[in-house]
Image (tube, rainbow, N blue to C red):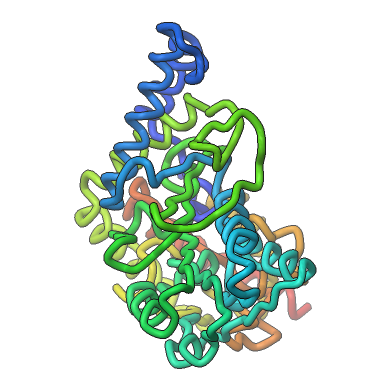
Length: 386
């Protein structure tokens, strides 16, 4: 049985999205900037996807800007807003557990003369609102906090943070990296006081290489890519029409039965956690119920190196991750930042596996995974002791 439990790294593209993309690639392949019928046809796909995505967030279509993915969206939000608002201040705030796309961009901005405050988190990976309030200053121009942590599934108090930020300093912009949260939660930027929101298509069963950035209509932001003026001048470059349409289709389907899908994923995650918890010397990192993400479970298996267990599971056709896929080749940098930030003992940092589910995960896959873990982990521990 093949069990793909690495959906935080990427997801299987929906058949409907792939079919739509194939038709556009081979038939409706016009450039949306062209004035003839083929171009108008292509522009219609882009317009429809923008409207669909805007509807899922209850925002206006003109506030959705297409990018190449979550990393570009994060860069555009942080760099674009920092440069545009530098006259008002040069202080930025983020957390210690952000994705490398945020942390590395913040480090770059520090080199450009900006000052960054990095908020700590508690043992469950959540920020303390009191820390956020204390960090906001008159010259704070931007706060960036992820919606869902990609390593342990911590859900940050986004609505409360947005309210707090606007109360303490109404001029401070609030950016949310929702790459792991969009499609798995109801996110309402207007109600949550979110000014900018980053999303990636391949995390919601859409294609890779596409994403979007929500930018509130009153937000001051500069482009970081220049060219032909597409996306209302904020993100130049010929639109990737097939991918945009595919992401729009995926977004539409992910939100059609969201509540039912969330209930099912939470039940499967709990089934996995319960099965693993009966093993000796294991630690589940972060929370596991409804106050955590429905699809991410981080588990430390004492006495077994992550890489060894990962490949042992792979031989049984179970595919998992040792952490953030975007940082897995750099274990000494941002990849383990979250685990260090929550105070995980040093001996467990390299013994941690991330399981991440999707709407396609089945009970049979969960039960098979638990069974294999019960077989493999004791054996690998004996081998390690030798």
